[in-house]
Every structure is written in structure tokens, then in C-alpha cells.
Image 1 (cartoon, rainbow, N blue to C red):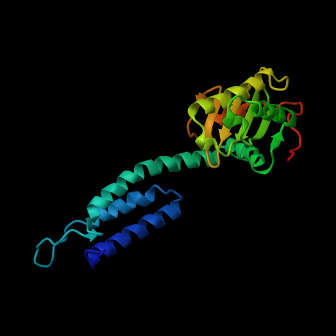
Image 2 (image 1 turned 90 degrees about the vertical axis):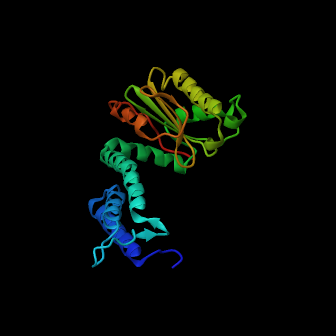
Image 3 (image 1 turned 135 degrees about the horizontal axis):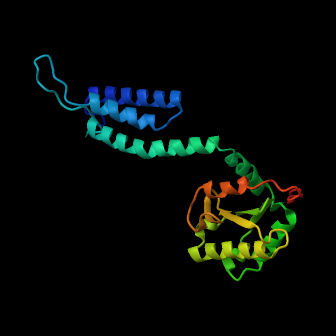
Length: 237
């Protein structure tokens, strides 16, 4: 055959795939798939002895020996296990759900959360000296909680922003939070999100981040005690 060198390689390849996927589905751990896949391919893909005691060819798929593919699968299982652990920790962290609720507002309206503060930030950004920032239709969400303020920005073209523009974006938002009576004196958690992921962030714990990053640096905001005074109003388009 053109694609499969021998039938034994095909059967062992399919067996490893079935075992790996079944284990991942049952356990909920995707890292088990490449781990068991690699173990089966390495263990069964070696030369087998025939009835005369002679070693036959190594099982192949796409003309590549299965043990070599098995080693690659084992190497892939390492980062996959780390991803599993991160995803499980995030699912078990109630702060992830709180942040997800706040992020929903960015998908629906131009200004949300504390409308007065959100509009103040948006008005300041429209007058930015940076043409990229001033020309962008940025959605703003703000949330006041205890001694902290959270500012989430939806910036559709963020992936095209240079590092200097991302830093300026964070700086201009921080300037508003430092001067506005609603947020002055509060610890600021500022994050700008592109179409898919956060690409600029500033938090008290992590400082300034101007690359693609996860949600975790924002979680400490939700550890602040809930303020007894109203901190947000209805959303508005």
C-alpha cells in the first residue's frame, strides 16, 4: 500500500488510538491519550518474532516506525498534562466564573459595569495621542470591589498593536483610574482583550504584561471584600 507499510502497523496504530481516546474520555484527562498511545505504539510496534524465532519488520504507519511515533506521543503528553492541570484548577476556582460573568458584558454593549467610570475611560481613550487607540472602537467594563477596581477592555485590533501602543493603552486607562473620584486610591486591575485572548494587562501582583496572557493575574481582584456601596449600574449600549 502507498500509505500503510504493513497491516500490523495499521492494527497497532488503531489499537493505541482507541485505548488512548477511551482513557481520556473516561478519566477526563486529555494527557492520558498521548501517554497510552505512545506506550502501546512503543510496546507493540517493536519487531515481533515469527514461528521460526526470526524477527520480523518493525510496525510502520506512513513508512514511519511506530516506536518513533510513540516517543513523539510520549513527549506530547508532558505539556498536555500541564494543560489538564491548569484547566482543572481554573474550573475549580470560583473566581474564574466571576470573571467570565464580567467578560460577558464586553460582548454585548459598549459601556458596562460602572457606567460613569466606563464612559470616562472611553472618552479619554478617544482623545489619545496614539492614532491606533483613538481610532479603535473599544468596549469598556468597570467593576469596583472593596479597595480594587477592575477595567476590562475589548479591543478588536489588539493583535496589530505594537508593544508601545499596548503600554500606552494601559497607561492611559491607569491615569483615569488614578484621577477619577470613583476609583482613585484603589488597586487597579486593567486588561485589554483582542478577539480571542488578553494581549495587554496590568495588575498589582504581576505588573505590566504586553503579550498574550491568561486570566489568572486578574483573579486576586475577586478576593477583595465586596463594597457595601453600589459600585455598578445597568449596562447600556
